[in-house]
Length: 171
Image (cartoon, rainbow, N blue to C red):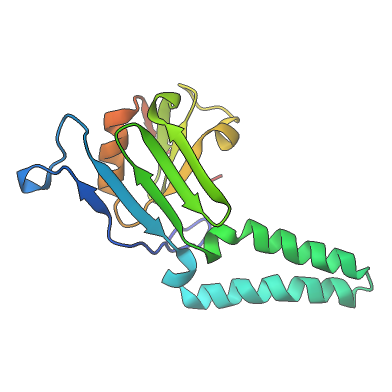
């Protein structure tokens, strides 16, 4: 559970191909790593609480006497911003790229676009700059671990240089 957000992650079993005997990844990086993260499925009580907030905020807007359009906009904005919580996200690493599939579509980025990465106990952020910058939130990718932190970091280290540990990547 992330102490800052209170989110607990759910995942399917990570699939790793191209392993050598003993479970180690080969040095040639000819492998694939795929996992799915679905926070709402992992913590149903939290999903119910968040769902209630999504429903109660528009009701409160209506009770405050504002136009119904504001209630609809409030609902849509909350629901859209919480899409990654309510719906699964699948991440796939392969030889050449990172692919993230979610409710909102598919993002695919080539490994050579990333110059560095930062990580904490729950996430890894792939960054397009060699140093920390405010643009990382817009140009980089924030990926949640799915119970496979060690495998993800090992794969990323083989593809991207310059790890920076301990920085807040989720903020």
